[in-house]
Length: 217
Image 1 (cartoon, one colour):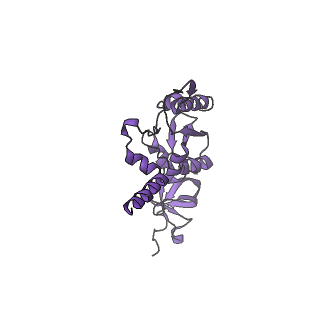
Image 2 (cartoon, helix red, strand yellow):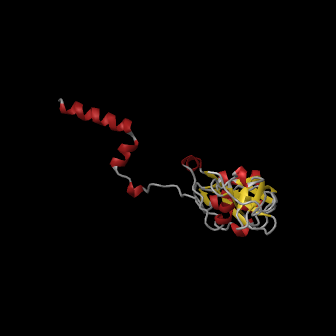
Image 3 (cartoon, rainbow, N blue to C red):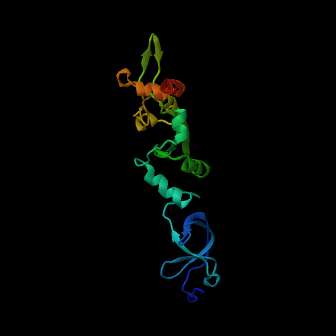
């Protein structure tokens, strides 16, 4: 159905470069000519007869940022929680992604997909992806006379090194044990003959064979 706007009831068409409006239905950024009617509504096209999409004006929208990304990066600060994949848990290392706005030095952490999209779209920002150790032990330990550097120390060094290119990251990230999983150890007193049988199936099979032989005597 064509939209009807009486002649003289809309302003002369203007052009937008794609940083002012989104289409009301698709929520995609709109680039091209647009008109405004006397009620303040915006529509794509040079005339009402083109029946262009209804538009929504976005105040102070950064150039070219997808609307979903614009909303997400604004909400992420303080709410994003990293969730390592099963593969990362097995490797003992995950990736953490940070974005810093050069204008106000604000830092946020985000997921890899949003990070990559922002990196391709946002300007005047600093981006950093770092390895984060999640395999314990978290604290430094001594194994006999040999020192072992724990995940906490390794992660602290990573953030301290990042401070050179992303000032303020050391105050944004302060928990260096974050996501670290301590190794599970079995205490000697918890071990039983059943435990050993389960750990050594070959021995269990041999014992079963001997038992069967004894019953046939």
